[in-house]
Length: 113
Length: 264
Ligand SMILES: Nc1nc2c(ncn2[C@@H]2O[C@H](COP(=O)(O)OP(=O)(O)OP(=O)(O)O)[C@@H](O)[C@H]2O)c(=O)[nH]1
Ligand SMILES: [Mg+2]
Ligand SMILES: [Zn+2]
Ligand SMILES: [Zn+2]
Ligand SMILES: [Zn+2]
Image (cartoon, rainbow over all chains, first blue to last red; front, side, top):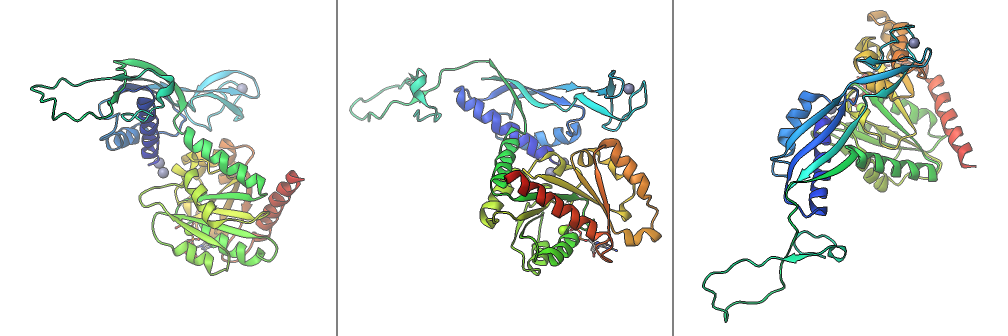
């Protein structure tokens, strides 16, 4: 359950931004989470509930922008969506892929109040 | 500095809000320093665009710089519970401690059992107990390193919490990550826990003395691991019988020598 650590990091950043901008709370927060980021959505929801209690994020509306995973085949250069790190190229069957999208784990923006 | 929010008010305008007071007896009012309150930002959108784990990444980078500057080879040992991390360390320390300087950081949720086992080999060790935490992070390593104070030109082993999931996401600042899998765990682990195998450089296959008793295909596990990490190196060994340990010791000495070269 590293998701709790992830929520605690988000809380830390949110509290810092609230302080910096002389705000009181966070009204909403947008997160970008790639399908291969290693974050489990159910575990995140569970950790979120526990982690944001009595913090500036307690009442924040959370939006998750999910990023599908994409890779490029190192053999034939084609780009395609993947589900797992070990998927193979659908054209030539090569397992040598470069992940070009889907590892994101980012706080995109917040609305402060 | 602003008393309300602790901000650095030099660069910003501060507004002093005065609360309306009813029926004031001005003789009784004590004038204190006005309270500074922030400018309300009512629904202000701010861009953050910051990696959620930026702090761990930054601290890991600090650790890595420290290790490089002191020519310390830091290795992060990860595996499921019971794959043989501590057993491998015990053997290694006993066999190599006259050739190399070792230091050990032990991570477990509870107990100092593993640190006690290491201490029995006369190698300096420190135990981190994470309580409910299921992985070590860069901050814990920084603190442990401060207390352990490893010497220059040494090898620092970090035994992570037995868990093939969470420790994959937390860079500790190590030079190499070593994943250990034992033959009783099943050969499909690299596909079930791809992040851990993708982020490691060496895969140790332990307990090969038990191969005759379990359904575990060495070639299969390697081929699965290569699917997630085509650069993965493998060493098969048994901590119990000692077979394969020489290959591991050679790997260690090679990594250690590479780092000594980098220094020059
Ligand atoms: N048969 C056999 N047993 C082994 C071998 N290596 C370790 N073991 C046994 O496996 C068990 C677990 O070993 P540990 O070294 O404590 O494993 P660990 O990975 O440190 O465990 P945690 O720290 O609890 O995650 C012990 O009973 C060891 O004696 C091996 O090569 N062969
Ligand atoms: Mg152990
Ligand atoms: Zn986890
Ligand atoms: Zn964890
Ligand atoms: Zn291809």
